[in-house]
Amino acid sequence: MQRTITIGIDGMTCQGCVGSVQRALERVPGVLGTTVSLASGEAEVSFEDSQTSRAALAQAISDAGFDPRP
Ligand code: 9UX
Image (tube, rainbow, N blue to C red):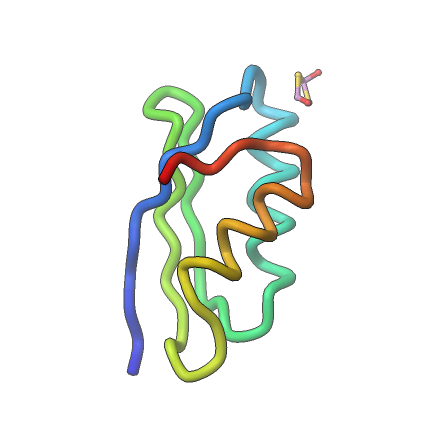
């Protein structure tokens, strides 16, 4: 099933950071689309929940050097 979640992210300080997070999320298999906002410090992510999970998306954000909020 398709799901859309919001993940808070600390550590994004410019649009370059936003691009890094966006690319990191879009590389995760099962991700259908993302919107990352510097202003709100949040990512909205749509994904196929048989292929990935909130935990895996948070891990991808961490691996890119940013801090997903619990
Ligand atoms: Mo901007 Mo973000 O120059 O790591 S890309 S601060």
